[in-house]
Length: 367
Image 1 (cartoon, rainbow, N blue to C red):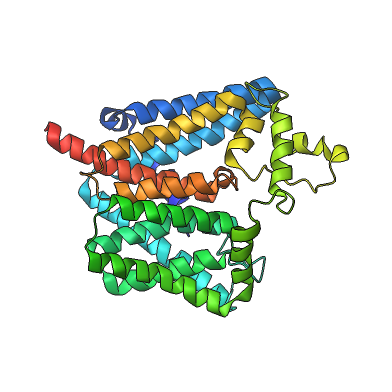
Image 2: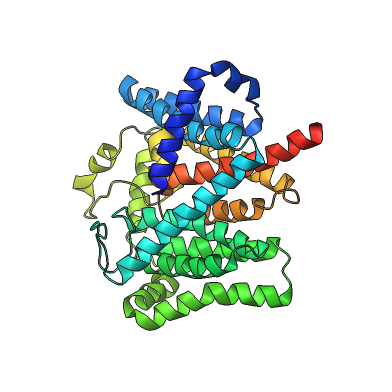
């Protein structure tokens, strides 16, 4: 559902640019975040050209340009008016409703589109629990903001609790750790009254307690995370990270090239079953794009983060996006979330939406 909304809107946006380019470029404004995006596009394109040739460089350019396109669509055009901002907000809320409800249906073995690949892990429409959980991160903090604003509580409170329930039942420990740290950061940023704070913590905690009581498998995974998660002898990720690090050392600056072929070259030297990525967003980018790519990636996130911190008091959505970024960067230690276009595009769309809100404030002050 999220993908349909974003792709349909992006195609419409592109047609409007083609039909009336003068109007688009008159309204187009840039800042450091846009420059950071261009650096990101250039770094990923150049590194792929150097280590993998023209074809992969073209693919990298197209993919990263699409990332920027989704961002500027929301940031510069779609949210140019408060009316459009409300339309986007309603679209996000509708997408959250459909996404969360489908996960709840899966839990009760109602999966009309046959999208659940693992009976013990909710995967929404994606057949991939990590992809589903990544989208839920965005929706969760977006809904928490609704609760803080005390809007539509009869709908939002059940939806918020179900989103937490779905996250826990994806059984993705990296996501749960990221969400927990992001939620703690949210509580530190926002000044709640004691009564409101207790209610919010209860809303988030009850689905977790309910799930743990119902599912021994979920409880077992949580126990493993706490007691065995950092044991290199029992967690295969440490072996995978070692392989990734050894591959990156072949080309420190621009990365080692195509993926997963660069992993499989070491298959004869490692008994560990090789996967298609490093299960770490930072090592993954180092392997594929080198230091150049990782610096550009971090610079992009830091530019967004810096703008949000600067305008924290004038943007009610800034705390939610800050905590989404924190949750993703923590999850990124254990997973390659940037490889899922469904997660990446939703995050960039929401980022553009939030920053457009800031730019509206800037335009109002300048006028």
